[in-house]
Length: 325
Image (cartoon, rainbow, N blue to C red; front, top):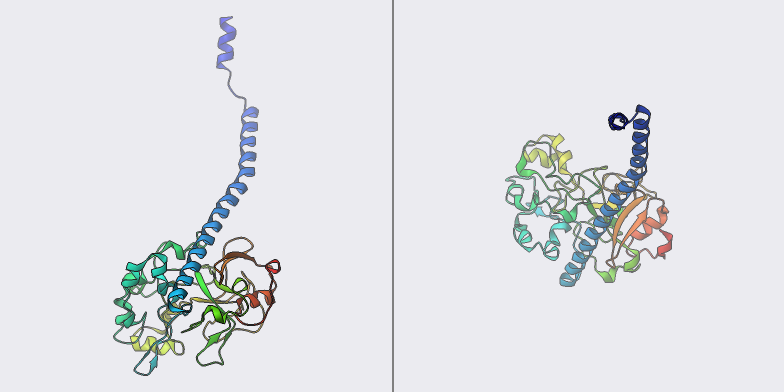
């Protein structure tokens, strides 16, 4: 009896048994990993939708005070020179995002990111430009780990990233000043009364990941017409201007230039031909959007281009039901 017990005690797993156990564990992991990944993405998508919900409420808070939505960004003229892009909607709604101290830190008299001498707009507003706010970052998008590198080895002009951009609709470069068919464009003052297509059928804010280009929430650098000449005035090499042109406004067409109008055609979320100002996300199948009525909805990338373009229009006369996207 003692000998039999010692033999049984010494006996371990055979190689075949070990391989079977390992195979079963591997199979279970293979079955569980997609479910875990899906659950994590669902949580990230829900957080993204919550960000857009809070941004939408803040935009309505701004509207309640000023009787219009904020502009895409403000432009300025100094000694006859149009400096182009400036403080953006992200900064203007800070008081309605419980960020009043950060809003008070902005010196609006200096403009934002002006690249004409003496460049004081670049340095005096560093506190606001480099503030990272999670509400402007989609958890799935990536790229929110710190200020965007402008490629000039000058950390004082770095800028905090953002992954939500305003809907300008279809831009028309033949107009002066340039206007869009959506809610936001440079120096815009669109009110709810101007949204004749219905607030529940008009886009306000959407996603834009770094798959396309970097964007920033506080404001935009550069000139509307001559970024290269402004870089020369500032003493920077022309190639630095590529880093200056941060885009804050999205359009429904696959254009690559927010300022000079869009290419004719459709375009959908995650469109393969989307330009640097297009709507794009890393959520499978589409993008989250905040609508003018304050709701947040997910628009599939399979939506009809004409439907998507109609959603971006504030007064195009389109009749679009929720079952069409």
